[in-house]
Length: 190
Image 1 (cartoon, rainbow, N blue to C red):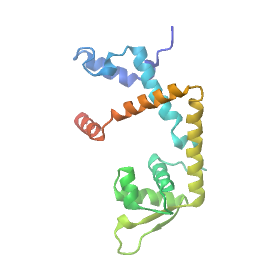
Image 2: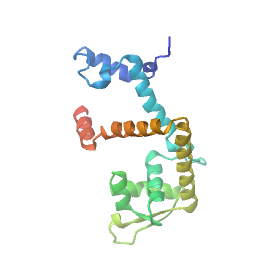
Image 3: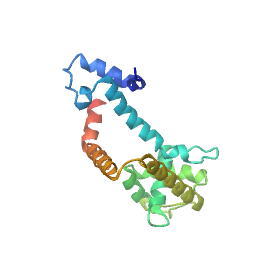
Protein backbone atom coordinates (compact mmCIF):
# COMPACT_ATOMS: atom_id res chain seq x y z
CA UNK A 1 0.00 0.00 0.00
CA UNK A 2 1.31 3.46 -0.93
CA UNK A 3 1.85 6.18 1.63
CA UNK A 4 -1.23 8.40 1.99
CA UNK A 5 -0.04 12.00 1.90
CA UNK A 6 -3.39 13.09 3.29
CA UNK A 7 -1.96 12.08 6.69
CA UNK A 8 0.25 15.20 6.42
CA UNK A 9 -2.81 17.46 6.32
CA UNK A 10 -4.73 16.74 9.51
CA UNK A 11 -6.35 20.19 9.54
CA UNK A 12 -7.66 19.71 5.99
CA UNK A 13 -8.86 16.23 7.00
CA UNK A 14 -10.75 17.70 9.99
CA UNK A 15 -12.29 20.39 7.78
CA UNK A 16 -13.49 17.78 5.27
CA UNK A 17 -14.85 15.47 7.98
CA UNK A 18 -16.64 18.38 9.66
CA UNK A 19 -18.27 19.65 6.47
CA UNK A 20 -18.97 16.28 4.83
CA UNK A 21 -21.66 15.53 7.37
CA UNK A 22 -23.44 18.73 6.38
CA UNK A 23 -22.95 18.52 2.60
CA UNK A 24 -23.22 15.99 -0.17
CA UNK A 25 -19.87 14.75 -1.53
CA UNK A 26 -18.66 17.25 -4.11
CA UNK A 27 -20.75 20.06 -2.63
CA UNK A 28 -17.59 21.70 -1.30
CA UNK A 29 -16.06 21.86 -4.76
CA UNK A 30 -13.85 19.84 -7.06
CA UNK A 31 -11.24 19.02 -4.43
CA UNK A 32 -13.94 17.43 -2.29
CA UNK A 33 -14.57 14.93 -5.12
CA UNK A 34 -10.99 13.62 -4.96
CA UNK A 35 -10.31 10.53 -2.91
CA UNK A 36 -7.94 10.87 0.05
CA UNK A 37 -4.91 9.70 -1.92
CA UNK A 38 -5.47 12.14 -4.81
CA UNK A 39 -6.22 15.06 -2.48
CA UNK A 40 -3.16 14.25 -0.38
CA UNK A 41 -0.94 14.18 -3.47
CA UNK A 42 -2.42 17.46 -4.73
CA UNK A 43 -1.85 19.23 -1.40
CA UNK A 44 1.58 17.65 -0.93
CA UNK A 45 2.62 18.86 -4.40
CA UNK A 46 1.58 22.43 -3.62
CA UNK A 47 3.22 22.35 -0.20
CA UNK A 48 6.45 20.84 -1.55
CA UNK A 49 6.65 23.38 -4.38
CA UNK A 50 6.17 26.26 -1.94
CA UNK A 51 8.74 24.82 0.48
CA UNK A 52 11.34 24.02 -2.16
CA UNK A 53 11.10 27.41 -3.77
CA UNK A 54 10.82 29.39 -0.53
CA UNK A 55 13.72 31.80 -1.07
CA UNK A 56 14.38 32.45 2.63
CA UNK A 57 15.68 28.94 3.12
CA UNK A 58 18.59 29.79 0.81
CA UNK A 59 19.26 33.26 2.17
CA UNK A 60 22.43 33.45 4.29
CA UNK A 61 21.28 35.07 7.52
CA UNK A 62 24.57 35.46 9.40
CA UNK A 63 22.73 35.26 12.70
CA UNK A 64 20.06 37.73 11.54
CA UNK A 65 17.10 35.70 10.31
CA UNK A 66 14.87 37.56 7.87
CA UNK A 67 11.11 37.66 8.05
CA UNK A 68 9.09 37.09 4.90
CA UNK A 69 8.21 40.81 4.81
CA UNK A 70 11.91 41.72 5.02
CA UNK A 71 12.86 39.36 2.19
CA UNK A 72 9.95 40.57 0.07
CA UNK A 73 11.07 44.19 0.46
CA UNK A 74 14.67 43.26 -0.43
CA UNK A 75 13.46 41.30 -3.47
CA UNK A 76 11.20 44.16 -4.53
CA UNK A 77 14.02 46.72 -4.19
CA UNK A 78 16.57 44.49 -5.97
CA UNK A 79 14.08 43.82 -8.75
CA UNK A 80 13.38 47.54 -9.22
CA UNK A 81 15.09 49.16 -12.21
CA UNK A 82 16.47 52.09 -10.24
CA UNK A 83 19.11 52.35 -7.52
CA UNK A 84 16.47 52.97 -4.85
CA UNK A 85 12.76 52.41 -4.51
CA UNK A 86 10.21 54.77 -2.95
CA UNK A 87 8.15 53.57 -0.02
CA UNK A 88 5.05 54.27 -2.12
CA UNK A 89 6.24 52.05 -5.01
CA UNK A 90 7.27 49.26 -2.64
CA UNK A 91 3.93 49.41 -0.82
CA UNK A 92 2.07 49.19 -4.14
CA UNK A 93 4.18 46.27 -5.42
CA UNK A 94 3.90 44.40 -2.11
CA UNK A 95 0.19 45.17 -1.59
CA UNK A 96 0.81 46.67 1.83
CA UNK A 97 0.80 50.10 3.44
CA UNK A 98 3.61 52.64 3.39
CA UNK A 99 4.07 52.57 7.17
CA UNK A 100 4.71 48.80 7.11
CA UNK A 101 7.27 49.27 4.32
CA UNK A 102 9.08 51.97 6.33
CA UNK A 103 9.08 49.83 9.49
CA UNK A 104 10.47 46.87 7.54
CA UNK A 105 13.09 49.08 5.89
CA UNK A 106 14.14 50.35 9.33
CA UNK A 107 14.51 46.75 10.59
CA UNK A 108 16.65 45.95 7.54
CA UNK A 109 18.70 49.08 8.13
CA UNK A 110 19.50 47.86 11.65
CA UNK A 111 20.69 44.59 10.09
CA UNK A 112 22.82 46.67 7.68
CA UNK A 113 20.97 45.25 4.68
CA UNK A 114 19.49 48.60 3.73
CA UNK A 115 22.16 51.17 3.04
CA UNK A 116 20.00 54.25 3.31
CA UNK A 117 16.44 55.46 3.92
CA UNK A 118 16.31 58.98 2.55
CA UNK A 119 13.51 61.17 3.83
CA UNK A 120 13.82 64.92 4.12
CA UNK A 121 12.26 66.63 7.14
CA UNK A 122 8.67 67.51 6.34
CA UNK A 123 8.55 65.19 3.32
CA UNK A 124 5.63 62.92 2.75
CA UNK A 125 6.67 59.42 4.01
CA UNK A 126 5.56 57.85 0.74
CA UNK A 127 8.40 59.71 -0.98
CA UNK A 128 11.03 58.07 1.26
CA UNK A 129 13.68 56.38 -0.84
CA UNK A 130 14.97 52.98 0.23
CA UNK A 131 18.36 51.84 -1.06
CA UNK A 132 19.56 48.34 -0.26
CA UNK A 133 23.24 47.63 0.32
CA UNK A 134 25.17 46.39 -2.75
CA UNK A 135 26.11 43.06 -1.11
CA UNK A 136 22.44 42.53 -0.17
CA UNK A 137 21.36 43.18 -3.77
CA UNK A 138 23.98 40.66 -4.95
CA UNK A 139 22.81 38.07 -2.39
CA UNK A 140 19.17 38.50 -3.45
CA UNK A 141 20.21 38.09 -7.11
CA UNK A 142 22.20 34.95 -6.22
CA UNK A 143 19.25 33.45 -4.31
CA UNK A 144 16.86 34.16 -7.19
CA UNK A 145 19.37 32.57 -9.59
CA UNK A 146 19.61 29.52 -7.32
CA UNK A 147 15.82 29.13 -7.17
CA UNK A 148 15.67 29.43 -10.99
CA UNK A 149 18.34 26.71 -11.31
CA UNK A 150 16.37 24.44 -8.97
CA UNK A 151 13.23 24.99 -11.07
CA UNK A 152 15.22 24.32 -14.24
CA UNK A 153 16.57 21.09 -12.74
CA UNK A 154 13.06 19.98 -11.77
CA UNK A 155 11.83 20.11 -15.39
CA UNK A 156 14.98 18.79 -17.09
CA UNK A 157 13.33 15.46 -17.99
CA UNK A 158 10.17 17.07 -19.39
CA UNK A 159 9.72 16.98 -23.13
CA UNK A 160 8.99 20.33 -24.79
CA UNK A 161 5.33 19.33 -25.02
CA UNK A 162 5.16 18.27 -21.35
CA UNK A 163 6.75 21.53 -20.24
CA UNK A 164 4.32 23.56 -22.36
CA UNK A 165 1.39 21.54 -20.93
CA UNK A 166 2.68 21.97 -17.36
CA UNK A 167 2.98 25.74 -17.84
CA UNK A 168 -0.49 25.89 -19.38
CA UNK A 169 -2.03 23.93 -16.49
CA UNK A 170 -0.12 25.88 -13.86
CA UNK A 171 -1.34 29.16 -15.33
CA UNK A 172 -4.88 27.83 -15.52
CA UNK A 173 -4.62 26.83 -11.86
CA UNK A 174 -3.26 30.26 -10.84
CA UNK A 175 -5.89 32.11 -12.90
CA UNK A 176 -8.44 30.31 -10.75
CA UNK A 177 -7.38 32.68 -7.99
CA UNK A 178 -9.01 36.07 -8.15
CA UNK A 179 -7.64 38.45 -5.50
CA UNK A 180 -11.11 39.90 -5.05
CA UNK A 181 -12.70 36.48 -4.69
CA UNK A 182 -10.08 35.29 -2.19
CA UNK A 183 -10.52 38.49 -0.17
CA UNK A 184 -14.30 37.93 -0.01
CA UNK A 185 -13.94 34.24 0.90
CA UNK A 186 -11.40 34.97 3.66
CA UNK A 187 -13.49 37.79 5.09
CA UNK A 188 -16.63 35.60 5.10
CA UNK A 189 -14.70 32.80 6.81
CA UNK A 190 -13.22 35.04 9.51
